[in-house]
Image (cartoon, rainbow, N blue to C red; front, top):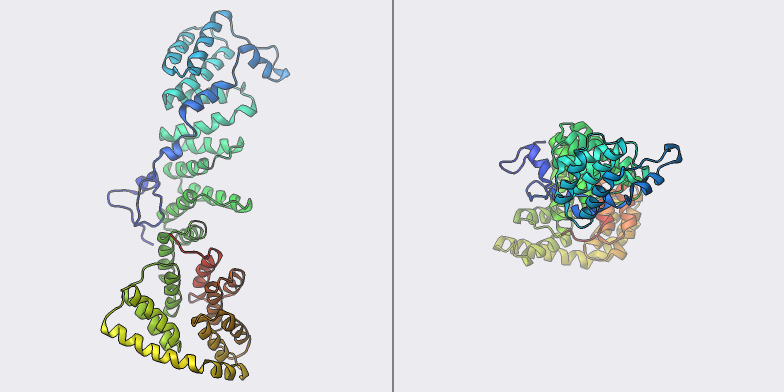
Length: 449
């Protein structure tokens, strides 16, 4: 695989930009603010401050084993109270100046220093001074005075603040610690993985994004589109085509956009073991998804259907191309008219040929007769015939027949039967790969957007 990025962007910039589409040709910037803020700065500042009411109350909240209770000397109580009121009034710079007065007191107790850093943490968040945020938050978190129930806002913001400062190794570590502290903030998963990658720990980033997806799968939760895209971009950067395709499969299942489908279908057709006879099934999927086809695509499908003995299908394909004005030359119209004549003959003789096929001991005739009914829009008649035909001997390529049965179920909206039939497809020439992506369509049978 040869990863390509938008002109002028290296791999570091590409990951930093959080492009919102895994499909490389659709590159838009994903603002870092979506990941780099845990909430509004003001709200976070007040959250950090909220638990503190008075030194005595805070001391009482500590375990009995921490006795004797720690207090603030009277001389510092007034500045602390003033700083608290300034922060609550969103006068963060004034609060920092007041806290500087407290810092100038040389003989502060450890408890007074703890309160100083806690107040400064809140004010620093308010003015968006990440360097001070990190220093003060780390002091408070590691002080041993912070109750376990209050740790989460600190570890969580330390992940985001370190990320904004480009301290990627520290950001990843704090993101993990925040999740250990009980955070369910989905952006932390992105921050952790992104930070690992930007800290040049690509293997760690790939491992953590895979673990995050496994955890979400186990909890029966849908991963965010951003998390899946991030896995794909890391895989693309590491030339891991299998993981990239797995990310695309997740995207078309949960976020079925045309760009994702187009990329997955194209990559499937380029697999080393892919046999060209399955191109017809991939083209049919594109057409079913409502994706644009070229003149050569429509002609390829129509000719392949004619050669397989299905003029009804060939006529339908040509009509679609002509109606969409992709086809329209005299050659196209002549071909369509020929297929229309052959299709009319097929329909006229359909009942007789189906009865003869049903009386035969071998299955190909009955299976193909059923498929012809499906192409003619009669799923109720065609599907049972295909089901009976595939059980009889004589099929030259059983996996191909199984694939076509699964596709017929999918086109008929028989979701459960389609997934079951397509899951039974084997083979090493592409049948199983095509069945896999048709199964993804069957599980979400609606047009992409």
